[in-house]
Amino acid sequence: MLPNCQSVLQHLPEAILLLDQDGYITYVNQKAIQLTGYSEIDLLQKPFSILEQNLSGAYKCTFELGEALKKGRFEGEGWKLNKNGSRIWCTTAISPLFNDDNEMQGYCCSLRDQSEKKEQELKLRQSEERFRLMVEGVKDYAIFMLDTEGHILTWNEGAQRTKGYSGEEIIGRHFSTFYSAPDLEDKKPERELKIAIATGKYEEEGWRVKKNGSVFWANVVITALFNENNQHIGFSKVTRDLTDRKENEEHLRQSEERYRSLVEQVLDYGIFMLDEKGRIISWNEGAKRIKGYTADEILGKYFSIFYTEEDIIMGKPAYELKVARSKGKYEEEGWRLRKDGSMFWANILITAVYNNQGLLIGYSKVTRDLTERKEAERALRESYERYRMLTDELKRANAELSYANQELEQFTSIVSHDLQEPVRTIKSFLQLIDIKLEDATVAELKGYLQKSQNAANRMREIIQNLLHYAQLSRGEMVCEEVDVNELFSQALQNLRTAIEANNAQITIENEVPYIFGDRIQLVQLVQNLVGNALKFTVSEVPQIKIRCTNENGVVQFSVSDNGIGIAKGDLHKVFEIFKRLSTEKAYPGTGIGLAICKKIVDRHHGRIWPESTPGKGTTFYFTLNEQPEVLQTA
Image 1 (cartoon, rainbow, N blue to C red):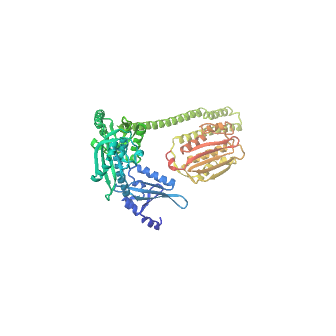
Image 2 (tube, one colour):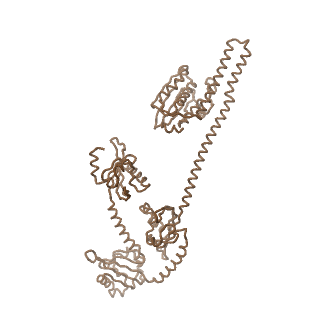
Image 3 (cartoon, rainbow, N blue to C red):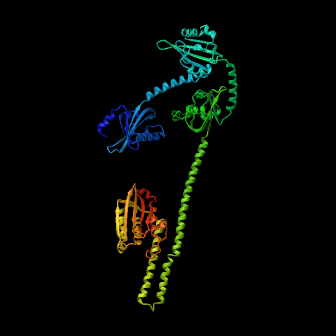
């Protein structure tokens, strides 16, 4: 970073952090040090998630950086953690940084401390929430506001329930609507307002009129409201229907007694009631045992006290009540909090409760601690995973044993046939030599000896190839850096006599300087493929092309010839040990060379395959992984 850029960043009012491509901090200005409480040494080369509160913060940071890279900029708000453990509410802005070639270099992150503003918002929200809960949540009281003349300004659910009017029907009308004709003739509404202004409030019990014309006995409190300048700005009016109070009180007492007897004896389930706003109004022993709160500690609290901070921010408690209202119940399993802050896996059932008139009066909530079951499921899942891994290993071992058995059977076949054939040949000609030793000419004897030597040489070639193949199956690899040009040169040098004898033309195209692998095995691999191409030529001048390319970290070799080619139905057979697709004497061989090639490529974690057109030639391709650490595990 240029010195003048550092000077600019150091004097910015925001905390500035520069991050590398992986989210690690590479620069911080003085404001960032002041805001977080960390020193520059504490922050440099640390992940940006050092400012988060818990492990999930790392995933959050990864998401934010991903959004910034995808959309060009990320902005958000949330809690950050400074060095002393206290929380800071910050606005965060993250932008990706690119160089002149438009290559992504990292991120620029700015943090602005909004803790004081957030605290004020929370206080205001709490104040407004308390007022809303106090007013809107009350159903047994009609609570509403009047202007200075007595016209209705607000209307709560309790007022609608008590008097029968909806807010749209009643707001703007005069409160005298609720009075009987005699009271209106006596100008009682006007008198109550005057008394409220003079004494601060007016209170009485008397008859009031509902929307449907029926009357009810009401407790009425009218309070005069004044502003800071002692100017009269209106009235608050609280009305309660007491007509059936005694009857309802007795019914409620009996209902509560039955409920308490039923519920309080249950210990394995937390069973309690919520009012229509979600505040706890009853508490059983099971709830105390599971969640850790006594009734005195929890009654009146909003039930979100049992939810994680993330769930509260996402509005989960309110959502559950909404679902319970619309569908009758809400059920799930999830994490909940105990009093001591520990978490448990709970089965939750919230049921909406209605009265005889179909009005929502609250919710019943049943909670069961399923932590032990959750742990048992996890243990079972882990056990199954171990079983599955063991099964996979057994399947692989079985496949390897099956393959080894197949090789053993093939080996037995070659011992019983291919090795016996040259032995029989040698024996036959030696017998001929013995029989004709006195009568045969020197030329005949030399012919017999030559054929015996050829048979012996073939047997030696078979035995050597078998030994080489067996060594590849159990021997150790020596992984090293191999010069590709030297690899080709050595393989061709080993075949020089055959190349010159066939007057072959060899073309090499190479764009890979070196590879990692076993030098001896790779030389054998290329030598076998080139030797195979020489053997199956149909032209007086064999033309063989060797290529090596690199695509996305994978090295690919190819050896092409203009030979007899391979039928499409035989392509999958070429790597079978002792398999010879051509039995003509013009194409001698043991049937092991290509099997050795396959074994070498497999040990280098590569792939080998042929592509061919009969009569026009064959190309053998094989790939190698360029990474040395992969090969070292072979």
